Image (tube, rainbow, N blue to C red; front, side):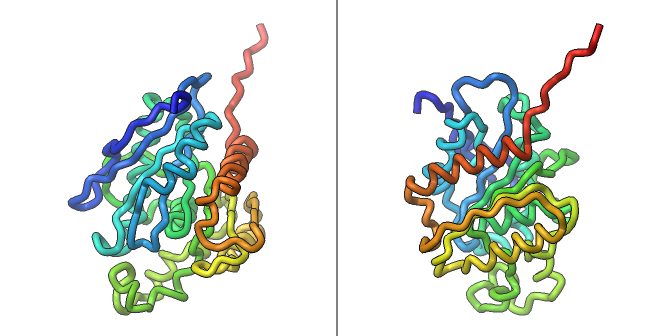
Length: 268
């Protein structure tokens, strides 16, 4: 699109034997550094198709003046937990390390994910460095200014013991591993501002996952916005009637909670 500059298949890190790639969407014209949104696809930790997020939010957010980076992570057939969050942290470090070239304010990096990607985004927001991993740009912070989670999994205790998840969590995951991989475990004071989106007719990830996380963050005193869409199922935002307003919500959320700092001239 003429109003958006796109770089595809940019190598942003290394996950084991895999090159981690991302697609970068920048507004054609920028008036100084802007916020960046690192977008994480869903797929039940079984697939990680960057194309879905490209269609839904890559272009949309760039047209709204944000830099969008659609990142990938290893899925469970490639590596077990915590490789997935290690890869997300690598992408966040890459954006911060390359902030100047991207036209990004390194203090205004937001992580956003859908479904399994929302699960990872919420953990990236709450982890204080224990899940950093090795993926490039060592010593660069992977911290985020805010989190957006769209129909996320917030509690893996309900699914971690299922045989179909053994490649992800192991055949007999420990309570510590389940706690580490559960976003609800990270809801505490100091968690970044968060926006959550879910459909109330979701047959894959029940919307109570999101309302429980909302309640936990709210109880911890975190600034948290909640958008529930009545009667909508999982990945309802493939419909532009929903993804366009959600992109507007993300833009507004960033402006509210991750505002640009305005320099104030000193008095003479």
